[in-house]
Image (spheres, rainbow, N blue to C red):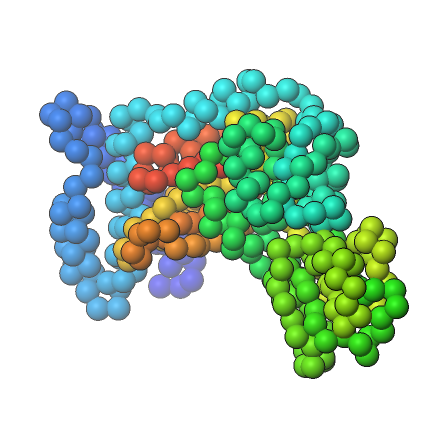
Length: 379
């Protein structure tokens, strides 16, 4: 057979595969209806294992893994079709109510919770998101979540990831079990400076204070000064404040240029981060769900069991709906052995049918699924 004949044969096979896929989904729907009428659970793990072993044995040899992967997707799609017919869950309704109740304009004034002290990068993010914020500072990220949940502040601003140091794990670890929704995000250009008392010189420095993320972002610069002791603290602005109050000529802080003026410090060196393209992404959270017009980014939280193929099964659902996944962060679940929490960021308009269908599918196929918010990212 020549190439054209082989391609025509492949096209016939593909058409048959499409027809068989549609027939399988129709049959799955009929099986789901029978199960509902007879009170039989949709999920039958023994039946699924039996099927996978059967088709793998039929394929045999080098094709066994490929056939298992293909049927894993088909079985997942068939189960999803049956579950969706049982009725949609509450998340879709929560999103619909949020769309209807949220004002058309994002507020210019608000009570906002930030971690740190005056001059923190969170303050800069807050002032970028809100035109006239009233900021209350808290000692820890957990305190910011508490302020939102208790109603002390309407909004909170938290760092979520840095382009050099990666994710802020302390924030991700606090997400599980908290009542909050993401309503906006933004990115801040981070330029780190080395600050000392005005009368101090670089030769006097023996100890440097800063937040652990900033220390990591400036690791190359700090590596050129092995004689310096590096001490983490809660916040870059807190480091500047501490050096200012300490009276120590041998102490320095890695912080922002804004903190130099704010705390009466001298800039010994600037731009000391490993890479000039250093940005931190911040999220703005609220207790109640708010979805402002134009929302095209969504964050989801899923807890998955530690089973082979479980993450692949979930990723196939995103692929099947044509939804772009932009971030995947995994963290161990507190108090659970070998179970992981996965945080997904997706690019999809909240108004698109693909988004709505994906939310319905995830709610009926994932045991622990949380929609954390749909929002826009402010440039």
